[in-house]
Image 1 (cartoon, rainbow, N blue to C red):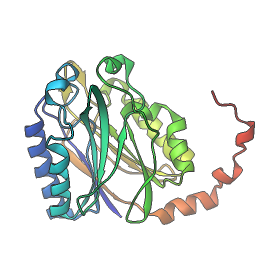
Image 2: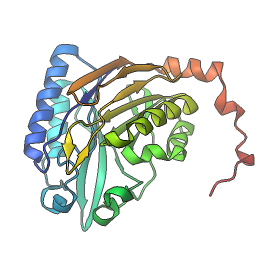
Image 3: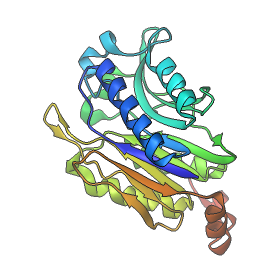
Image 4: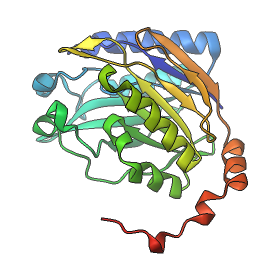
Length: 264
């Protein structure tokens, strides 16, 4: 399965401009490389304009989801469509979306772990449902958002449910770039899964973002890695066979003794 991760900058507070840019990047990538899956970053329609989200966030009547559905169908490509600010009644979620090549919204996930350093809990509501596994072309996958990466229980739960690839949509800062890289490598190795991350580049409100989007295989080999500050596409081929081989050669899941682990 061919995957293309689109690493790009985001225009703060301008969903229309960001949709236009995403459409251009997606269409160009499909025309040039014909991937099976295209991946977008976190909060790509608005950036972290938290104080203004009530005015510009999507809701059930707004444009972004229909826009993505139409684009996926026209381009015949699956979209792991990053995340958007999504308003549901009086609650605001950081919502990740998965849309298949037929234009169907097959999965959404609301970010569980809100970032206290960015004051996210003041403006957003944490997800109210656990992350789940979804399928694209027969491969089992999971999806988390940025700060979620710091919580190993989340990716382990997805792996235990059968996930063979886990996507990460992010706006991760340059100041903690080393954490970003090492945590992804750890999650891939400990869970014997592909990790595919899409991080933005650029700067907003005094925060520089780290780029460094990555595709890592179940052995911890880096199949592709983006730069820290350039718009670019990271590409790789992923296969459930490679996951199965890793799990057979190093049977971590068979060796687990969870009755001896203490959970809080």
